[in-house]
Image (cartoon, rainbow, N blue to C red; front, top):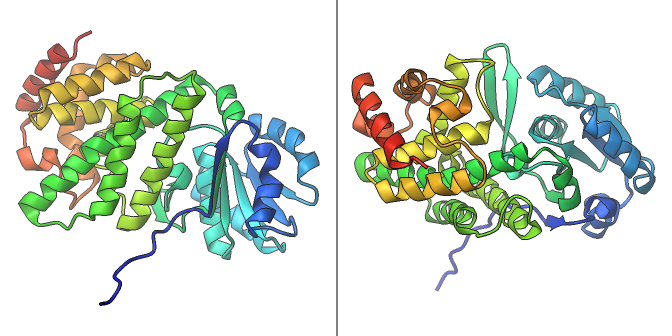
Length: 353
């Protein structure tokens, strides 16, 4: 009888603990990612420069590159610089912009990429996607996922707490994204990858139901693990469906309609997830989600992220245009702006503190 199985794309190293960055060279050598220690490390200015001073003694022979712009041009310049050297691997040391830039540049020159995240703002730390600004606004670029992920919880605590809160919103939104994926399967016949859906949903549920808070190492570990599983789920599926549904459509709509005014990514998709859950008819689920978001200090209504109710309603109406071809509860219901306004008023009343 044949053995039917598949290989799951995942990092060979996931190191989440206090002091992890101090052991970076040893971990990479032990797992044969960089036995010679020839590393190119991409960092941002500011906090990145401080980390460079702290880590340089433990990473002799490393070349450091500033890459915190988050634009496609920045990633291309980094790739050009990497091509002039002989490196074992590229390390993205920083937040989402640095890691996305390093992922793209490493893919362009054919080097393995190591994500050393200094905040937990979204699931891009382990995803097969780089989000980079370009001339048309912002683009998503498919890249190989990181071969290793290193997260130092002591460093995570040094970042502003808003980054942790953003990661919470992004992780919890998985529950909405998977529900939309399953809805599309029932209505349109879209194929759902059961393993990817299970990983993404359980990642969201783990964060949703954890009793800890942003100041607990145990909670930060679960949050980081959830973001890792979200990235792996997207690699398994081959697209962003496991972690992106109506919640992200609403977030992208706010970005496009109100550039420069939008809140953090996780804050926007968190509200989007709670509202989409309400639209799905799951009032108790929406209340639970909104209650957890509120407990962690995240917004749950439009006014708490600086938008008027009418602006939020307009964004929900516009949201399906941000992902043509993607079927979510928004496309399924096809609500008019007036009905969205009524539904939002009902949602706001249902989740009122």
